[in-house]
Image (cartoon, rainbow, N blue to C red):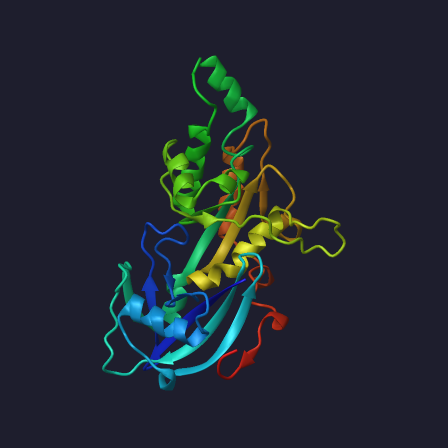
Length: 298
């Protein structure tokens, strides 16, 4: 499991956040606290000092750094170490690694920055279908059957009416990066934002199941659990899929079928669901046993 350090930088009641570039593979344009992965053999604090110098062009030492907390994220294979950093008035941080920007935010301002609606989007049985394949054949088109532009246009309407962003939960994500998934969607007219994709091979969380690898609901929950790391607060979400393996998230599912794919009636249901916030228990904070607070370095 990789160790990642995160600097919570505070000055006069405001917290410094940096905005990720639009070209980032994960969470483009998201606001987040500075930090990064520890190098082999590097202590957590040394990694913190290095990241702040590389990302913001500022030097801090141990007198500026307070206690830490830990959040383990098994699904994504990393452990986050949070440090509170008190930046001196003479420090002038700047986006030294080409970030889109930096800023100081009050807690209520941070919440507005982070709020977003998410569509967890399947492809097969949603953006393609038997009906699309028959239409494709009747129109005597050549080439590989891909995604249905009509279904994609319906997703565009959903995005336009709700301001939601897409997280790809389809198996198409397994061999493709976020950028490649964006290209696939753009080729058929998608105009929204692809925030990311759900993780692969997450552990099964059902104590009664004999499965070792989780179902799609587990993958989606794993993404929801780690979203705050990227400065996101999920206002609402919907799952659009032709499968039903959503487990505890089943009531956020708009189920399509492979025969027809995504229809207008599904879009209407998804719009209504996105405008209805889910139970707070679905968008979890770290469990108590996953967090331990201590002074100094581990």
